[in-house]
Length: 127
Image (tube, helix red, strand yellow):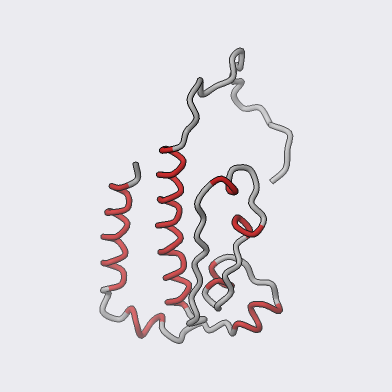
């Protein structure tokens, strides 16, 4: 389970957010207005920190994302601290997804019978 990682992450977050000049270096800095974020189709923490709760993994789940509990985090501040808060919360969501996945692994073998790993080979597919 990811409980230990969660504690370690919280310690790092506490240290980061208690840095003496963190507020003056992040609050109101690097503003991205919600309209600009929407109109220019920004993605990731940039758009979510400008008030848009958009995440491709939740909006158009692929592979196993549709099976996992997914929380899309957004902030309204439109600045650096808002982007930081989004990323901090996304780490917690990732740890929750890891826990859920480990708790719900199906039984059976981990590899297909007869599979032979051949190192340094390319797979066909797309990302």
